[in-house]
Image 1: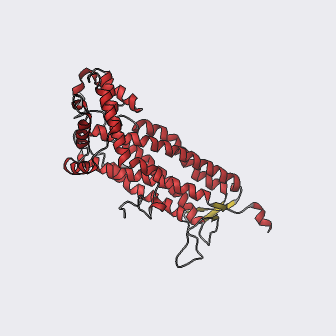
Image 2: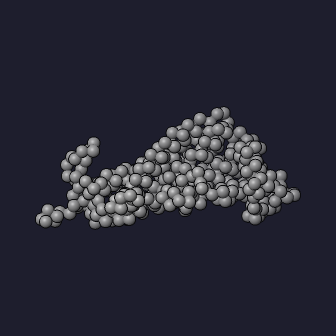
Image 3: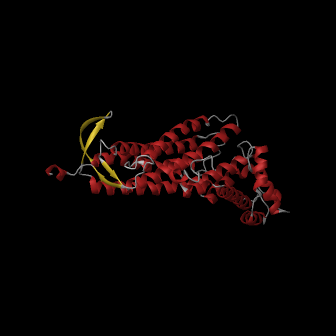
Length: 358
């Protein structure tokens, strides 16, 4: 049993996406945290902040490190974050004489935020590829059915005849717009978090700008300054996710309406059945797209609430992000998967011109 529908042993078949869920696994999160700690040691030694040999020792310890998960869980109950205990364990693994140089001039938020961004990077790259694939599926559908006739509807009422191509364009254009805007979202969100205790990196003195730049380069992230309490980039990211879910939800809603028996403007294969009415073919994938759009729209307001980070660091707002952002990513991934399945199951859309002669 799972409290998350995205990882539920049964519902996960409908709403899950194992490929994206992997990036939010505990193993991937800790790997990303260790990547930060390793890179930090490397650039600090390059800048002369750590003694020679420290970086190699810390890097090797990170490579071989196996965390005590029970200790991390217990410490998180006490500290609110796992990083202090993770650093304690990592220092023990490094040993003398370099253990005190682990996590130098960093704070828990630097580790956790950067680890999140490092995992969002491949997720957003994957989403871009899926958007391209969806556009290609829509283009293929347009080639097959584009000249067929449909009845246009405004405010749920029959309006004037249109072509299937017109309908498909209303699904495709928002996806093209989202793909075009993803670059600016990635520029904003894929950035290093490194501010130290209260965002000033005072322990590094005159080396802080150099080390920050080197660390960002080492991790393949942008260097745009500390954003401990400036959570706009993450909210911009989830705004994009909600728009994506909404665009896919519009497609799903249209298909569900078109698939009604009394409308009959689309024929789907692989539709869902009923335990009581075996004659039915339910447009399950289309319905899921509507559900996921509504789900993300409700979580979006929570992410906006998390913008209120008091003073130099917030525990409550930060924790709220951990609860909401992964769910929005998973809903978006499930939407992209369901949309591809739905488009692949479209056997007929609209009425061909030569049907008039029959």
